Length: 198
Length: 198
DNA sequence: TGTACATCAGTGAACGCGCGTTCACTGATGTAC
DNA sequence: TGTACATCAGTGAACGCGCGTTCACTGATGTAC
Image 1: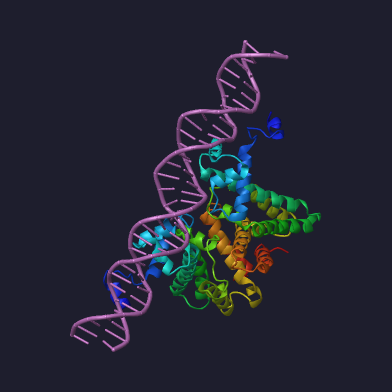
Image 2: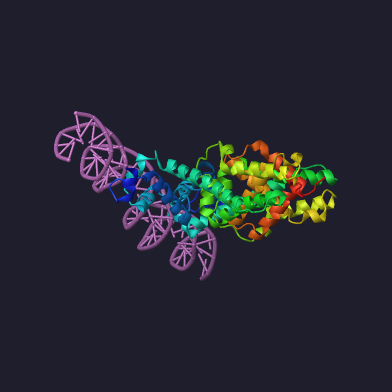
C-alpha cells in the first residue's frame, strides 16, 4: 500500500515527511537556512502549507529534522571516503585518517549553506553527538593510527577534540572567505604534528 | 555642532549611523542575526524606519557594517587581554599567546549570537582580513614565541592557520553544544604540541 | 545682530509581499462484514 | 465480491503580522549677506 501510493500519483503522498525534509534541503542549499520558509518547502513538494503540520510541530521542528539528516549525511560521506581507501596496514590507517578530514572539508566547501545550517545555530542537534557516525569514525580513525604504530596512546589522548576543532574551524574559515582553501593541508599537517604522527 | 547635537535632545540625531550599528548589535545579541529587522533597529534607536536609508543602502549593508564592527571588537578584546599580562620574557610570551586564544574563546561563549553573525555567513567581511587586528595579533604572538625561544622558526610556519582553525573550531563546536567547554584547554595543549612549544 | 535661504537629516504614510499557523473541511484509502 | 464505514492525510481559505523599501514631505540647522 505504501508501494501503491508511491507508484500512482495519488491524493496521499506516500512519504511526505521525508519529502519535506528533502525539499527543505534543496531550498537551503540554494538560498541559505535564513530564507527558508515552510510555505516554500510545501510548495516545492506540491502540497499545501498546512500539510506539514501533520508531521512537524512547527517550522523549527522541520529545520531540526533537516539538521539531523544532514549531520548523518556528512558522516556517511566520510564513511564512503574511508571505504574507498585500498591501502592496508599503516599506509591504510594514515590514508583513511586523511580521507576522513578531506571528506569533511570537501563537503563543507561544496555545500556551505548546508554546513551553516548544521553548525550555525539554526537547529538543535541531539547532544548525544558522541553516538553520531562522524564522532565514531573519528574515534575509530585515531584508534587505527595507534594500532598501526603511527601515533602513541599518550598522544592520542584528546585527539578527537583537536582534530575536530581544527578541521571544523578550517572548513568554516575557508567557507567564510577568511582563509584560503590552500591552507587546509597545512592545518592537517599541523594536526598530525600535534599527534606526533610519523 | 556635533557636540551640540549630542548634548541636546534634538531633531537631528548626531550620529545615527553609529547608533544604528550599536542598536543592531544589541538586538542580534538577544535574538540572533536571523530575526534582525531594519524596522526593529530603527525602533530601538527611536527613529523612523526610513531614516536608516540615509546611511545604509539596504539592510544587508547594515548587517555587514555590524560584522566589521564586531570583528574589530573581537580583536580589541584580545588586545586588552594581552595587555593585561604582566610577565616578561618567555613566560610573558607564552601567557600572551594563551591570553589571546582564551579571549577569543571567552568572547565566543559569552556572545554566541554575535559570534555567529560574524562567522555564520550573515555578512561580507573585507577579504583584507590579513590587515585585521585579530590576524596581526596572531602573527605577532607567534613571532614573540619564536623570539622567546619557545618555538622554532621551522615550526612557526603555517602556525597562524593552525591556531586560528583550532581556536575558532573549538569555539564554534562548544557554542553549538557539540563539544564540552572543558575540551578547550585540551585543544590549546594540542596546538602547542603541534608548534613544538616548550 | 538680524534675516533670508539652502541644506539635508529624519518623518510618516503607503506599497506589496510572504510569512507561520489555525481550522473546518474533503475525499481517498483500507477494513469489517 | 460488494457495500458501508471509520480513518486520517492533505486542502484551501483565512488570520494577523512584520517585513524591506519608496516617496513626497517637513522642519531644524548653519551660513551668507
